[in-house]
Amino acid sequence: EVQLLESGGGLVQPGGSLRLSCSASGFSFSSYVMSWVRQAPGKGLEWVSGVSEGGGNTYYADSVKGRFTISRDNSKNTLYLQMNSLRAEDTAVYYCAKPALGGCSGGRCYWHYWGQGTLVTVSS
Amino acid sequence: DIVMTQSPEYLAVSLGERATINCKSSQSVLYSSYNKNYLAWYQQKPGQPPKLVIYWASSRESGVPDRFSGSGSGTDFTLTISSLQAEDVAVYYCQQYYSTPLTFGGGTKVEIK
Image (tube, rainbow over all chains, first blue to last red):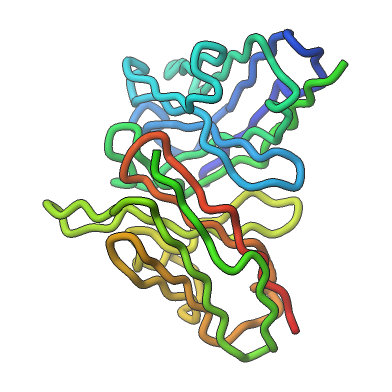
């Protein structure tokens, strides 16, 4: 059974940093592009970032480019999102998402499985 | 960036009646070489992550009831629930995966009338 378990969320002050993790199981992690999608409270979905199977290619939304870094450790079946220079508008639930087989072309994916999400709150 | 516009924002439908949600993209998401539309639909219930309903604009995800169907091509797409059930109350989002940044529609909240 595919499982995606996010962790690392919490309350952080504006300008601060946080690292999110997504622990994956139940599938061949290193064979899939992995992504982060976020949802501000009461708002819609926003794609944040994606990383290729081997980690060599990364993709970012303009809203986080230069502040967030996506990475993965295939030996640990774990996806990461390093978030720096956090702003109030980064407050959201952050989901880790996995595509279906054949559901990605480069970083262009639709997602078959989603984690339960981890809440990041940026506030003083 | 491709802008995805959904309509309506809210939809109230009687049990057993048809629900129709529209999604329009600011440019075509049809990859003509493959003749595939890079468009997906998700269902999200309160407190839950999104659930994939439709991909490639009209392919139903495994386990999704056949009352859900997707149609359209190019820039105009529709998600239809042929006979609304109580468990279909949710917010529905369209998403294009034709190009990055990947973008979603603003969502349509479906309720029971």
